[in-house]
Picture 1: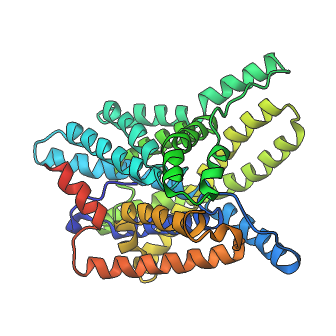
Picture 2: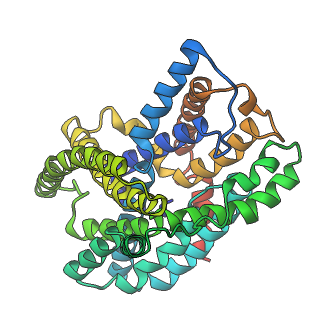
Length: 390
């Protein structure tokens, strides 16, 4: 999740609303996934068809895209904080690294409840912004593009082509290993399993399926976009430049997303070797998600600026407390679906879980609006800020 210490007077509400939109997508996905506990009741007939349709639609809309938006905005927030520190004559590097250590702590707490959380990954990968923070725009984008190309996966492609029978095990740790504890009635056993095996499985998955390189690349792209002012609407000139950029992005990314959708479907249907197929899935899906995510961001921002945020602005408070939202989702969601709590995984398929997710989202949204009428920062954001500036 992004750092949330940007002063209110400097906040860009369109970015906050975009972040809130991403959190909304994440909470809906987490609910239908039962927070990575893929245990569902048997359904039949119309309900089964509806469950399948809703599942496919939500994964098509948000899977791999919502987290990509967060990664992009993480890099942008780093730019805002660094620029603010430079104006005060300070180097933000040391304090930023301390903030990452604190974020790692929040991630460890979150991992107790949710196997598959991303705060630990973000905290670890956030350090890549330190050595590149003073690079030129050109050098920064060259490295970002190189990482987005998934170099390790291409090495796997070469390996698979040279040794066709090769099919090495990549997932040493699996989320399936914690299912007995997620479905069990012991909170303590669940916590122990999530903190060790669940977290290792999450990081293992991120490495094996390209999330590490994609996230680091998006951090850098967000930093680059911040330098260029492509999220700014502080003046007519800045707004015009931002609109022009995102219009171009939308016109380019939308057809590329469509092309990639059919290209990857064709490639996947032609490859039979398991190891090569898995590797190509990682590469092509990461590129497809990138183009789809840029299409969503471009459309969201252009619509926001076109109607002055009259509709999307409702999501801004939600986005301003994204760290609190995310951790709260894990704590409450695990109680709702796991065995130590209500055990709703036994009775809720996709449709009912989605309805719960919508209610969950609306409750969090209402809480965020209430909270910011009384306080400057979200609950965990306030704690993070205070610890940062000890």
